[in-house]
Image (cartoon, rainbow, N blue to C red; front, side, top):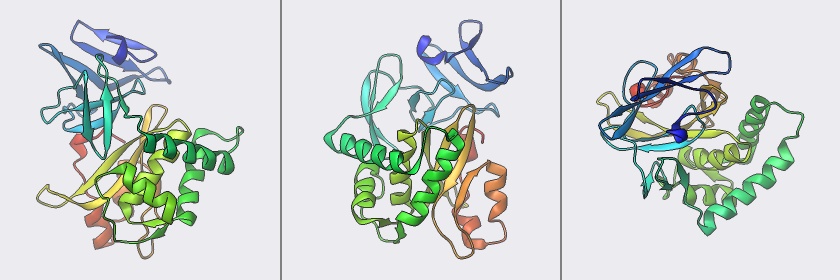
Length: 251
């Protein structure tokens, strides 16, 4: 169970693992065992499904359509290929393209941050860099593949919301911040063409969306409530920022 334990695991019987947060309080997100399988339960008591999550122990895990944690395999999920070990911890596959992107991202982070900055300040520096570096371009033939989209972003300095998400992914990784892919859904629950990053800083998650809209300069480090509130008076922004809240850790 060590792969799910985090720095301070708190066990409740054999089949539940909770986490004690840095402020001493208990995290309501936890792993729960059913039979031989583990499921990640969100703060509201729902089981997260069909996703790649950044859990409280700072590992990535891949969940199938039923919410079961996958182990000992390689899968393509949320735009990346993940290699999953026998404990369930998942890492992006180390392809040549991945290594190039990580090296390029690290060189940019060296230029835009310094050791005296907090992690929050480094995240802000990433957001501000992307805002200046990337021109918004709605067209993109690489939606659904983070590696290809990030390559386009680094080479051409332009792209749509998915390209913005992809480049941000590698920059956040370079400062030690895990992120998740969030896709907007329509009123019928079907995915629609907008994406952004859900980043994890310490024990908290924040929405960050670099996509420009008229009158908006992006959304940086917002809770779910702030994120939804900020665009409620703009029909386009409101439509494109709805998402299945039961399938992501609470922000």
